[in-house]
Image (cartoon, rainbow, N blue to C red; front, top):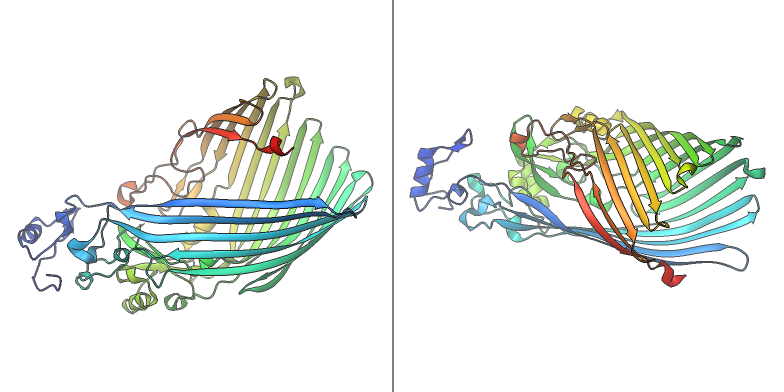
Length: 519
């Protein structure tokens, strides 16, 4: 019976096998129900989303009679993820539960207007400036009722909402907008015979809800000899949290390494009453200081650039560690609209509680050998980046989370690309050999080894404006290291792999250029 009066036994599962005697009693009693009747071997939720990404950009540019260059543009973009989940149940609905659900939808929209101006004051001085207005909108679309409903069997311990990814309730759903505008100016000076250049820029930006900020940049380049120059820059930066980071609700079923079991973990707004008990506050903007110093070597067909950089970020945004929920906090979350909190074990939220220092080296070398007729280009790219957390709040960030921030991306990456043109440039060949260093996966606490990949493409211009390309990415079908606990967690490869986890990808692309129609 739905009210529990039938006295149905609890079917315990030991070593993945249900108690046969208890299960037999349930199956034989018409007043009892077990999901073993519908899924004798259990079930694995299949979660995903259908995405639609669209953008449109248009504008005009020209020059006034007094030589002021102008450029006006308007751009609009939208990205929508309509989630789905199937091969699962809302256990609290008992035998009335569907097995596939529409949990809801995330939609991000942006609208940008830009006006850019530039004016050569004289042969050695150039002035530039402009205005920008941007509007961001984040929307959470409500899921179907069964995906978040707390059914009649919930008081008996049956989990509520669609298992694996609960849907968005009417309280979690909503639409949030934020607008901002910016004005900026730039001046650049050039020395005699291009021996040096120096420049400075200022940008004032006003964000709805965060107020105004003023950032600047100074840069310089000095030619020491004919083929070698030094360059450097110093700047400040500002990044406001997105409406999605400030307002998003979601719950997902994840593997807990300590418990060696699946648990429901939720991400809730930092302003939630439950988040505030753990230090949650309204999110603030990130602020950064950036310094770069490098050199440029140009020797005919060979060019080499190398730049050292350092970026210090304060009030950096990230997700906190997971917190266990107390019974009274579950009630508070349900009251706020997180209906799936009735079977939620842990939660986390976005915070600004740490600072980082990122330093590294970028090297780019290009070479077009004259011996090959100038039709073959070689390019080599190297990046080495090291990130350290310089300040953090131990109440919100765990040691494993800190390690993920410092080691979650490869420290070293490099690639060698070869491009060749033949048959009056109608035939183009491309080969790219890449390397990604090791990285730490927060989900399974495992460090994956570095990997090499090869990409190939051949393109041929059928006509002046029509090009056919055939190629492959990761043609040797290279995968990340297998997860050492894959049998328990169900995640064979790291989701944070910098080159993906789907192996080789082959494609054919037919493109048409409208350029000649407007020449």
